[in-house]
Image (cartoon, rainbow, N blue to C red):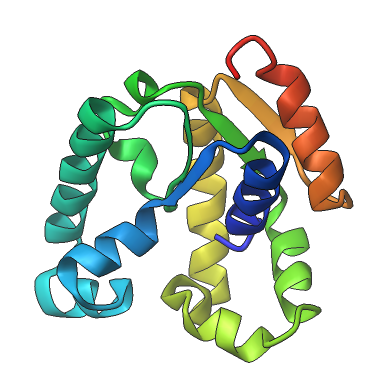
Length: 162
């Protein structure tokens, strides 16, 4: 949720040449609608089913790739079977400040419905943080780091895997 997963995935692709896959983009393509609309029209349970199906597809059909997942992907049972899981960690206040200071800030907030209620979003962040850490093989704190610095750290952590 606003930590820079897409930016880091693209930078990691440029450094390694590994194909980068954005799970949210793939789900939107499969459903032919934005994630916000999927939730509105079909509910969270349906969305989680799409995530699970996508995880199974990736597990059986993709090797040597960078996979950027959405915030709820940690619920997918076979997540760690996909490969090395790196959690890009940042505090809630840092994420909000990062988004507020970015180009097209209002568009970035609009595409993240959870951020329409900051109090609730902060609660979700606090609840999920330990769950993300438990699923991760590596945790990389991204606060006050450039994408290049983050990529360098990730490459060091996963050097035996790429």
